[in-house]
Image (tube, rainbow, N blue to C red; front, side, top):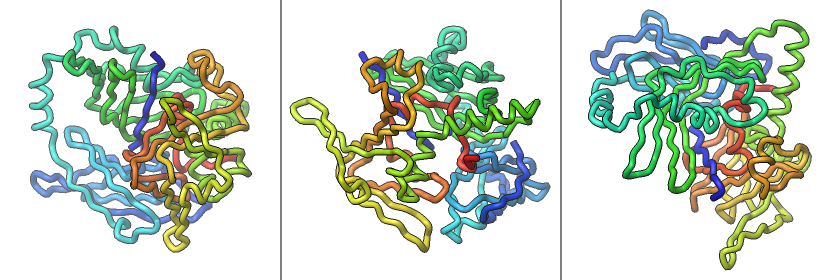
Length: 364
C-alpha cells in the first residue's frame, strides 16, 4: 500500500534588527494558579528565529516583521500556550498569557502508562526520525540531540503509535545551518491508514558559520529548500505571482473512482482569491476541495523519486485538501490560518523538519 504523509501544520533567544517594517507584541506571562509572574518563560513566534524570555516581572517584548504568526509560550512544568498575532490586528499587540501547571496531565499520563513501549527508542527511533526529520538529502545532515526525552506509546486497539516529549526536542541541521527547538505537541502514526500526523512549535536559531565557504553553502542550501516549498507558494500566492514563480494549480476530482486533473485558465478566480489591502491579507476558498500544486522549476529530491516511483519525476507535485466551506487566510510573510483546516500531502509532506525554513527567512 502506498504510504500517505499528511501534515497539519500548527514547523533560543534572538536579538534582531530589521531592515523591513515590523510591529511590537508585548505582554505578561502569569502563573494561572496563584497570579504570580513567571520569570524566564520562553516567548517566541513559532517557526521563526524570533524569541525572547520574560523578565523578573513576567514581562516580554518581541519585535516581529510585518505579517502573521503563532505566538507561543513555554515554561518548564507548565502547559504550552499559543495565540495568533498579526500586524493587522491591534488587539494582539498587547498579549498576556496564563499558564497552568501540568499536574493533572501527568496524572493522566500515569493512567495510560501501561501502553508505553519499553525500549521505545530502540524499536521506533529510526521510524520516528524518518517521519519527523525526514528522508531527504538534507536529513542526512540532521541530528536529534536529546532522544532520551521521547516516550513511545502503542495502542493495539487503535493500531496506532504515539510519540510525546515533556521538553522541546533539540535538532541540529548542519545542511541549512540551523538549530531548532521543537516543542512537540504530538506525533502519531496510524498503521491502518499509513498516515503520519505531527504538530508542534519550532523555534529556529541560526548557527554561526565556521568559514565564508560554509556561509555561502548555507545560503545556497536554504535557497534550494525555499524553492517550491509551502512557504514559497504562500508568499507567491499572496503577491499574485504564481506564473512568474513557475507554480501551476489544478483541481483534482474523482470520477468513477479515477482521479483526474482539471486545468485552470484563471487560477485566482478558481481559488476565489480576495485581497484585503487594509489588513494586508489574502483569503482563498477554492471551488474544489482538492487542489494540486505543480512547481516546475525543480525536480523532486532523488530520495523521493526512489521511494515514490509512481509520482511525477519531472516536477514537484503536492496536494492541498481544504475543508468544504472553510477559507484559508494568508499573511504577507507566508503564514496562513487556520492551519488545522488544511491537509498537505504529496511532495510538501515529504519535506519535513530537515527542509523547514522559518517565516522570517528572506531569500538572498
